[in-house]
Structure formats: structure tokens, C-alpha cells
Length: 344
Image 1 (tube, helix red, strand yellow):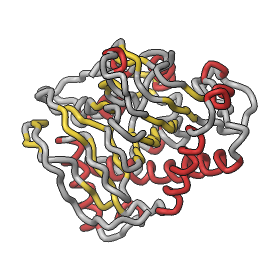
Image 2 (cartoon, one colour; image 1 turned 90 degrees about the vertical axis):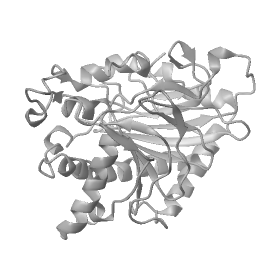
Image 3 (tube, helix red, strand yellow; image 1 turned 180 degrees about the vertical axis):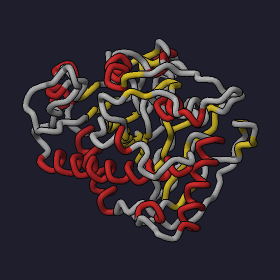
Image 4 (cartoon, helix red, strand yellow; image 1 turned 120 degrees about the vertical axis):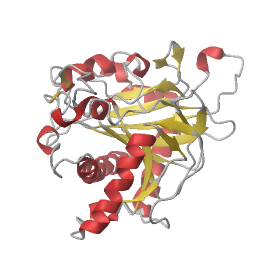
């Protein structure tokens, strides 16, 4: 099968959840919580901007993950979205199979439990993948991986709220990307020419408990991997499951923090920065009692973007590590195999 992917807030400033790791010659003390209001508001006070992007830089250098607060995505929208997601997964299997991903030539639609594989093992989740359809086309454009998504016919509000969330995440992704750009010492809109027609993807996932603990072929909700793209923005319900691996091979849990999105950088940022920012290995462990819901949004470059290391990150002491890469061609290859095959 195809590849595996994974409102207002009471938190302000940066806090840390304790864990041990070493990355970029520094001690990792946890996943930072970063107030991104200065980026969302396009704050003119450079002191506030510098504080936010400095925290983002530390997070990307030392962890590869960070939570964001004050992102201006409303609690009411998030609640409605998760209710719609739950409503879909509660449908009888025969209804979900009507939009099976095999009916799409561009990797859109429903994947049942156990039909995705990472590291040679079936992942224990079900999901729907959505992607770009810029001209509301009714036919698959296989060459550019664009075209119609598949929608369940029995939930009238489902399509509306999914499309709304995709719009909101596209806007949020732009602001976070501007912050990342500044954090790298680049102009605020450095990446925009490469992302002004972003080939974004979104997934909704359900991870049920894996009751058959003797079945080693289905040990994780998603096996260990790095994300293939540029930036992942993850919405989670209240059931924990995501785990992050440190450089010593130790796993630690990413806590659930209401009102936040969990952000992680992907393989494309790693290539663009010649390894200055590195994608972090992570997985989802199957919950023990209650099913887990998650909604990752993948903010990506344009299909035809050629990604190559930025000159400032290539020096005598850090020679070029990556050859130029056509994102669209890479995307198609990645969708046909597991994340675990991506070279770091």
C-alpha cells in the first residue's frame, strides 16, 4: 500500500516537559511550548518576534518538535472537527470502504486497519488522506498528484469542516514558516516562492487499542519514522500515544496539552538547511483502552519545487550533504513506500 504519514490557550511563553536527550551538542530538557501570537498577529515589535523565533530555533536544533499556543484557531472549531472525525470512524465498515484509497489514483481516501506498513509491520490505525484540488477538478491528475478527494456520502457537514480546517492550517502554516525562516537568519518570506502553491496534505486517523498483544506484526499505531515533508501541524484528542526518540535511542511520550498544536519539522527542512535543522524520529503507540484520534496537516512545498541546501549552511566544515531533489517526484515515490525508508 501507499506510505505512512502522521483556539485560545491558557499557556503563554515557553515551558518544558522534562525528558533526556542530546542534540546539537546541547541537553534536551523537553518539548517547548511556544507562544506564536507575534507571528499570527504580524507583530511590529521586533523584540516579541525575536523571542518567538529564538525559541523556535532552539526547539528545531535540540528537539525537532514544539507545541504552539495562541494560534488563533478557535476551540469551537477544534471541537466540531474532532466530533466530525469521530462520526466518520463510527460509521459501519462497509460505508467507509466506499471511499477506499484504492479507488483513487492520487492517494486519496480511506485506509482500513492494518493496510499500511512501516518497518515491515502493519500499522494499527485507520485513516483518510486528503490533498490539493486547486481547480476543483473532477478527475485525477496523476502527473501532478492533484484532483478530487473522496468524501463520505452520509455526513453532510463532514466535507465542510474538513475543507475549513485545511484552509485554516494553510494560513497557520504560512505564519509558522515565516517564523522558521527568520529563525534561520533568512528573510521572512524566503520560502514563500517555493510554497505559494503548497502541495499540502491532511490526514484524519483513529488508533484503536491493540488487544492482541501477541501479534508482533501490529505493535504500533504507526511505526518509527521521520516525516517526509516540510512541516507537520498535529491536532490530537485527549488520548496520548505519540512518542519521540532521542539520539540515544530512548523513547519518551509527548504529553497532551489542551489548546495546542504539536509542530514538527520534516525531511525537506533538513535538506534545505543541510542538516542544520534535523527531522526527529517518532511513532504512535497503540492506546491501551480508549481509541485515539489525531489530525495531522502537512504544510509542503510546491509540487515543482527543487530543494537543495541553502548556501549559508554549506561551509568547509559542513560540506553539502544533499543533492537537488524535485519535491513532486520525491512525493510520489514516498507515497508508494514506508516513511521508514527515508534516508536521514
